[in-house]
Every structure is written in C-alpha cells, then in structure tokens.
Picture (cartoon, rainbow, N blue to C red):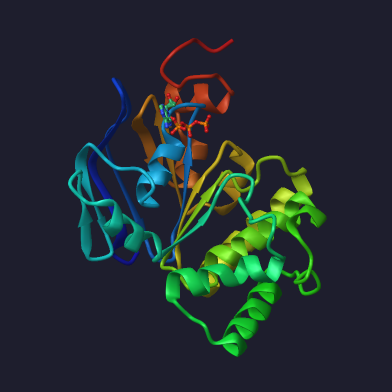
Length: 255
Ligand SMILES: Nc1ncnc2c1ncn2[C@@H]1O[C@H](COP(=O)(O)OP(=O)(O)OP(=O)(O)O)[C@@H](O)[C@H]1O
C-alpha cells in the first residue's frame, strides 16, 4: 500500500458542547477504497466533511498531501485544499439550473481555472463515457433517474483529476441493481484514476463489495477497523450488534 495521502491524527470536532468526533485517527492511501460504517449520528459525515475541508477541527491535526490542517487553519486555506478533492454529496447535489455537461465542467473552471472551451468539451465527453452516460449532456438533473444523477455527480467529482474522492452515501435511495452498478463504477474509476476513495455508507452489501478496508465508528470514535475478510470472520460483539442492525454499537443487547 502506498503512503497515506490523508491522515487524521487525534482529531476532535465539537458542535457546542457535543463532541461529534472524539480524537479519531484515520488514514487513506492512493488506490485504496475505504468505507466508514456506523449507526446514525456516530460521526461518519462529520469525518468526511473534515477531510473535505468543509468542517473545522477543534483538536488534533490532519495531514492532507504535504500540508497540515489544524484548528488554526483559516477558511481560505481550507478552500484551497477543497480544490484538490472530489466530493459526491448525499443526493448528488447537482446544480439544477445547469445541464449535465455544465455541471461536469464546473470543477474544471472553479478548481483548475481552465477556460479553454475545446479542452472542457473533450473532458466532459470523456467523463460521460467513463460513467456510461453518453447521451445526457444537454439534459437537466431533474430529467435524470436517481442512478443517473449519482453517475453525473461522480463524473463531476473526478473531472479535475483529484487525488482523493469522497462519497457520502452513494447508494442511498437506489434500487439494489442500480446500487450495485454504482459500486462497480466506484471500483473501476478508483483503479482507472488511481485515486484514494473514502465512502461513508449504511449499505453493508455495498461496503463489503467495494472496500479494501472498513472502519466502524460509534459515538464519535473508531471502534473497529480491518479488511472485509476480517469483518466476515470477526467475532467481536460490537461488530455483530452493528451487523444485526441495532441502532448503536455500544448500547443495547441483541434482540
Ligand atoms: N452542524 C451541526 N450542528 C450540530 N450538531 C451536528 C452538526 N452536524 C452534525 N452534528 C451532530 O454530530 C453528530 C455526528 O453527526 P454526523 O452527521 O457526522 O453523523 P452520521 O454518522 O453521518 O449520521 P447519519 O448516518 O445519520 O448521516 C450527531 O450527533 C449530529 O447530530
């Protein structure tokens, strides 16, 4: 495994008195797909938002590429980090008033400052080919199915060739067949673009299908980490409770 491109070291995040992340450690390497699992409210999205430069940290530090993000890092510096990442938000977060082609072109202009129209056209076409959506360039997001919107969001997140791709619940709201299609696309594109991928998900089938490594969180902490094989062989009661679909890994007994 190549050295990490993202490392969280003892990172804590507070919302008022609520400690949403409690000294978490996490790393992500190029070419790796890592999935964060855990019950609702355990801190998965907050972790993703920290790495995306959308959430300030109150303790610890994050190494991103060759720089450190600390509680003192200013918003304008976080904005620069954001341009080196690709993010697929829950629901896709496409711009409704822009066509598919304009949505995909957006990061080229915003993150890379590229104005060359011929280059932009070529890149948009390439990305649409990668996500198997050759004919929707002039359509608006509202004209697409949920699965197509996710694919456009993935194309938009990768078009400026980021080193890190972050996906928040990429299969939520999709039927199982479409969800598996999105899983396959994530794995294929991760290999093709040699990008480090972090996926936040509730979808156990998806996680076991795409992850090189899994991270289980509960109540703001990482409570387990390992490979899918290790997960399947795991005899840990906390993991079993989560796999059985209980609300919290820490609390409650098996029904
Ligand atoms: N902007 C915010 N203001 C206040 N509290 C917040 C904020 N964002 C998150 N929290 C709280 O921090 C905790 C972690 O939230 P987070 O969204 O990271 O959990 P999650 O594991 O992603 O949950 P879900 O699976 O439901 O999306 C929760 O208790 C949540 O209510």
